[in-house]
Amino acid sequence: MSGEVGGRRIGVREVAAAAGVSTQTVSRVLNGYPGIREATRERVLDAVAALDYRVNNAARALGTSLTRTVGVVASDAVLHGPAAGIAALERAARARGRWISTAYTDSDDPADIDAAVRHLLDQGVDGIVLVAAHGATALDGFDVPIVPLYGESGARQRDAAALVVEHLADLGHRRIIEVAGPSDWRESLARTAGVADAVARLDLELVDRAEGDWSAASGFALSEAVAARVRKGVTAVAVANDQMALGLIGGLTARGLAVPGDVSIAGFDDNPDAAFYTPALTTVRLDVEGEAAHAVAAVLGDASASPAAPVLVIRASTASPR
Image 1 (cartoon, one colour):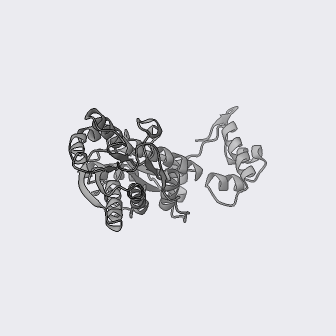
Image 2 (tube, helix red, strand yellow):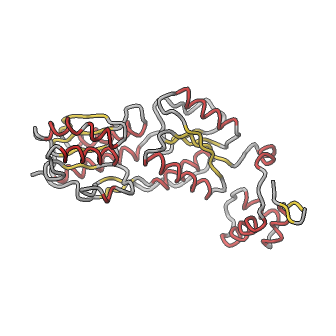
Image 3 (tube, helix red, strand yellow):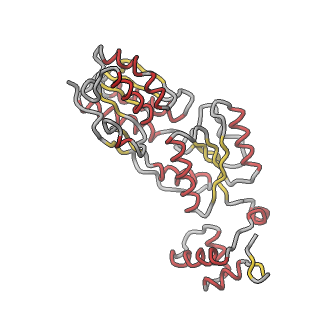
């Protein structure tokens, strides 16, 4: 409900008077209509804040069937990728005059994911974005749009993984290992597909493929097997995220191998700490803000420009083989 001043309830008319605009303009700003001049929009939002005007979403939903809320189903939010995605979705929704309502789930339980989706639908959300979507997550059969954060096809995930392999090939590496994420994650499958495509196209040898759980601990646990391969001629490892790369570097170093002297390591995500690893990590960066804006536009049924292409960030963890 709206705020009150002197016992009088604040409504659209009071906001319009304070901003010096019509009630129709206030309504258009609050409903996120395009074509409003930025200065006008700011005056209206300033008046809304000053008067403590609050939209009654329940009443609005009765008239419009919309709550101006985007649902987010998220799992594994302690990891950098999902956490960054949720924060970007919040910003993207706010830019469109919406809020997000997030339901956290057990990523290994399809029934739990389904319950989270239905919980958000019961709130009357305008659509749902899936963060850290798993292969078993249903995307259809519901009354509102449901989309994964990085798109159903995962094309930019594949392109990003291919960039990493191309970089390693350019340095002269011919025999590589892939450390993949969990095989039930859509993002992991897309990244593995990108590695496979680039390996085949560049006529490289994928000597082995190991699977971690996205954590640094799992990367460390895989380091013994990777070290054995390095001692038999593997010279580079493409890792599906930066946290696993961090653990792998630590494990290889503990086993007497130098990065990149004995083996080059490249990650994925460009998390905020990647530049401060020892050595600083070569990785690839997705346009998370653009992906979030694209996903929010998709659930709202609007056309939106595609996110920017992934960017390779070259640092000290990769070099030409000895």
